Amino acid sequence: MSLTIWHNPRCSKSRQTLALLEENGFTPSVRLYLEDAPTVQEIRSVLNMLGIEPRALMRTGEADYKEQNLKTVEGDALIDAMAATPKLIERPVVINGTKAALGRPPKNVLDIL
Image (cartoon, rainbow, N blue to C red):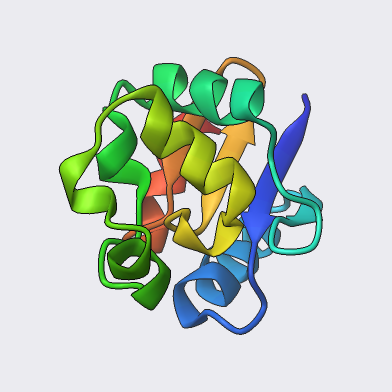
């Protein structure tokens, strides 16, 4: 099993999700996605696994979201923005093979284990 978490250690939900995985006996690969930004293709793949549209994976309250005027764009432009500015990506994302879950709340990730 290939278990990965897109993690931001400064985020309480991300820390809680990582702790939940570890408490359940899992040792995920930790990707500090702010330093190692996902590619456009990786984001597209995660969106497909989650079954959601790009905006649903975005932190729409971020200043960068407003500064980039992303409320008025759709689709690939949003994916490009997340790849260029990874702090726009909602966190944490846990990927298990061909499945993904957003750890909001953290217990959501248990469904893909």
